[in-house]
Image 1 (cartoon, rainbow, N blue to C red):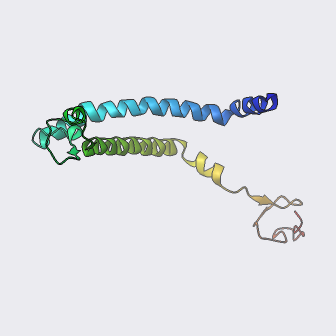
Image 2: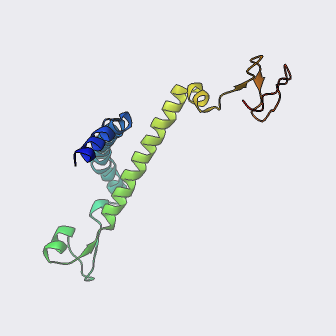
Image 3: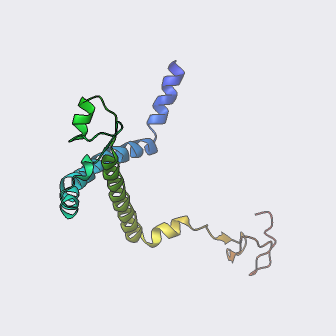
Length: 150
């Protein structure tokens, strides 16, 4: 048990785990903000444009009767398919995905060539003349040294 706890402690103290935990917490807070944006600002406008329909309140009662609200149907013990809530969640997802896309795009623009340089394969050099050599070359094109084993 002590060994298991020691391994768990070592795992949790890695930098990537802490960064991931921070990202999850910030993502949760960001999700709350986006949910508020959708529910409190966008959905009322969409409802106004659709003639006063509350998109989040759209549902289908499984007994094929009509009820004034989801709460009334649930109080009557009737199951409901809440497709309006589903549509709101889809809109939330699309907004969050768009914001993350814009954030990543902005970071890539900010980092620019640094990211591309970091992803590039390092150049291969001749151990004798230090000239740049193609990765598939067996001999250096500059000094003709055999570099097959390097």
